[in-house]
Image (cartoon, rainbow, N blue to C red; front, side):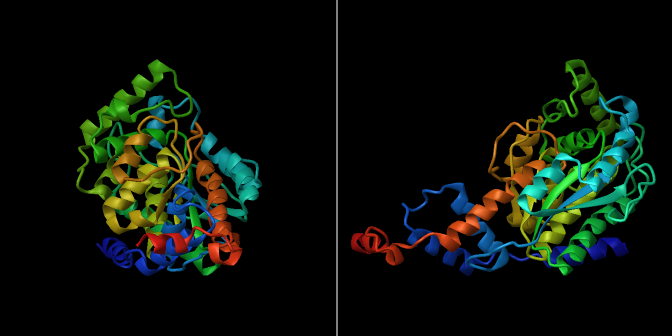
Length: 360
């Protein structure tokens, strides 16, 4: 009960977006030397960032990708083309700076924070954030993935990691994850919370063939039937058919919103976490920026349910936070437009506010 109250207190801190800052940003955009709205989603992004931060022209000098790493007991059902030990091996790869998200984060000027929230092993590294709730979830095809208390602990862990990072100056977060088999609980969460069929929610993951995808869908359907997660209780869904990485990311999203930081949502697993977060704290949806449309089946249903429009569609399905990090360049571009582009008056160009006033 204590953890429920702690989470509730964080949820209550999330406020509506700053409308005055949004209006100021919109007015400035309309005064720039371009037709109104001609930069499309870049302008929408700029206005959203202003509302989140309360600043007309926000900047983000310190950005972080939080990679939640955990194992999934359901892997023993043969739902992944990679063995479970790859989770721990990839954690070491992240910490050595050799994964795709590390490369893209370096290019975007973002820090990668790797969190062991449930790896089935003993990864050790001075840069690893060790916050293990348990050594991987149980096999959800045989019973609940974890207890409700463990799901709550994982959510609060995500919030704590954000809070610690904000204290060190981080202003913007990207969601990332690593966990062999984690598209399986993501598909289960998607099906339960959106109402789409298990078939519609289940994709190739790490590269399953058609028979493998069908087997995976059968395992998910069996897990849902066995555990009977309550669609109106997102924590129950997490506990019964979710994952520690998904729960941790839900916490990252809630914590970011509570602390008025934009949070860039990566692909399928991250967006499943985003839907969980939005069901726990509906106001946090306004703080989310959808980065890309994953090739993983079911991602579109999640984005549609969240009413989020992704900035990119580049056929990615790697996870780790890679699509989210790519969007940091668009966020930087939005800031540069606001800071560096001339206004009609400063450039001596006709057709800006003068034209608008003449039409009144």
